Structure formats: C-alpha cells, structure tokens
Length: 233
Image 1: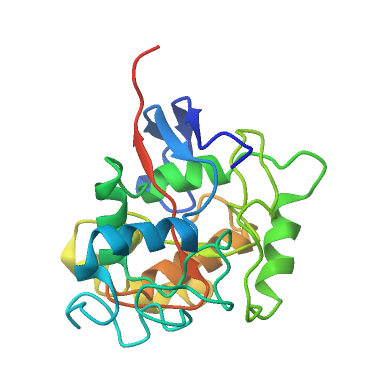
Image 2: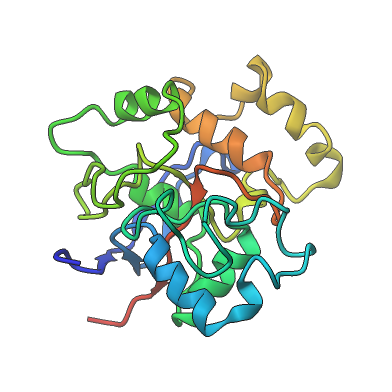
C-alpha cells in the first residue's frame, strides 16, 4: 500500500469508559497496523495455513458463517474486494492471523487509547454515531477510505467493528458476585453509574457490543487489525 503499514503509538495515560473507580490506566508504547487486515492479506494467510479455510475449519473455532461472503474457501471474489477489510472472521482466526505475522490483537485499553485520539477536522463522536446509524453495505469500502486520526491510524472508526485480544473482559471486575449483574446493567441506565464519561454514547455502544461477543462469532462488519510490541527508540 502507498501508506505506511504500521505506526508507533507512544505510551501514555488515559481514562477508559469503564475502570476501577474511574482511575486512569497506563498504556505502554506499541506498534499498530495503520489499517484493518484486508481480504487480500487474509487470502494469503489461508493459502499458507489451509486449516483456516472455511472448508477445513473446525466448528469449535468459528460459526458456520465464517468467510461466508467469499466466493470459495480460498478466493474472496467480487463481494470481498482485495483492499476491503476481511470480516466474518472469528476471534480465533483473527488471533491466529496476527500470530502468523509475529503480532497479536490489541487489548481493549490499547484500542481505546488510540481510538480516543482526535480526527483532524471532524467531530469523532459524530463520525461514530453517523456510522452506527447506517446499514452495513453489501460490499465494504477499502480499508484506506476511512478517517485518519492524529496518530496516523486509518479507519479505526466508521468502517467496521474490530476484535480485541480481551474483548470479553471489558466489564469484568474480578469479583464474581459483582460480575453477575454486569450484563444487565450495561444495557440500561444503571450501566452509566461507573462510567468515566456518561456522555460518551459511542463508547457505550462499543463496550456493549464487545460484551455480547463470543470468540467463535462471525459477523459481517467485524474484522480486526494487529499490533506488536514497540522496540525501544
């Protein structure tokens, strides 16, 4: 691609939507893919690792809709352009792809840390809410078609949802009795009680979506991008 493949994200402190007593958390420096993984890139992965083709994959690792928009087990076809983000992939498949590249999925905190950065010339929350209100197109645009935020990362908002390494831990407190009520409070007014920013409706939707996922789910607007540890400057 004409743009850089990765960008270094310098570490820092931010306050996630949900956290222990709304305390800021520290995120160490890391390197993030500039764009989500494309159909062309995933095609190369399943060619090298045929066990991840839909014709071979165990149902333990993905639902039956895995890569259903591809024309065959190994070829994306017209409904999955080469430069569009790969979707209908499970967490297991996304994790395996990143590992094959010597990378990993970002943590929720890493993803949210980058996602909190401004988009020059645009209202980031309005960008997100506008996207949430639109139906998913049958053919997704190119991964470079979305907004670029101040870190240089592209299409973090407004194109697809993205898997994170610990997607199902966002609402876990570590105390089992308290965790028992988290799902029901997330989707009602009580869910805002411990939020860092009660006006950040877009973030509530992201956390609500993540909490509804299971690792084998495959969804037509859910893809991923990879990160890796940063080398010291």
